[in-house]
Image 1 (cartoon, rainbow, N blue to C red):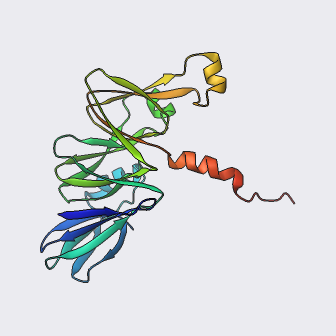
Image 2: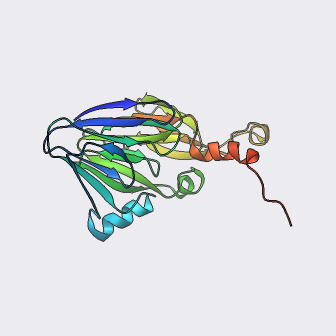
Image 3: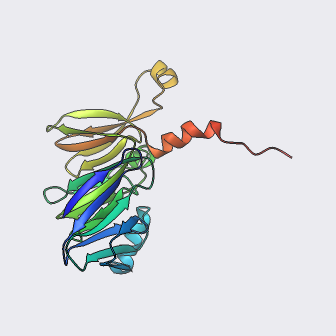
Length: 227
């Protein structure tokens, strides 16, 4: 699979497929394609697969695209301002925030992952259920804003703003810590909790979550008038 990622604020990934090559995407992700690509939308994995995708805030249906001739082109676009990242899941499964999955090779398995700790589920900003991508092959993931990747050594811990974690290797441990210090809680601007990530493994940090963007924009939206 040959691909290029184009654009900045609202990027897309364009692929060139040869005969028989396939790619699978979330519902509604395709932006344009060559006329010699066959498209089929189906409920992969039966009812359990449908429910898993629904719980991770994706459509219960996946769309499969197959090239019927060489050099067939297809493009998938970002649903919100941010970044598209290509990640090979062959060596390590990836835990992602909900609605991260854009498209992948059909050998990539889209599953769900439960937070190991209730405190992380309630206060970590991602809820109880996250997405897990495993299997083998390339997956293309959506993240909010720009993305910085870090490689943590075994036992190394970083503390991250709640909601800033985009993805991480399944070998990384995610936890929640309370911000220490009365003045830090009241005036530090980071809220009551921080997310801690402990290696070994890779983590991807996003600069502006869609929730934070909504909070920044909301004061400038027209407000309904009381009658």
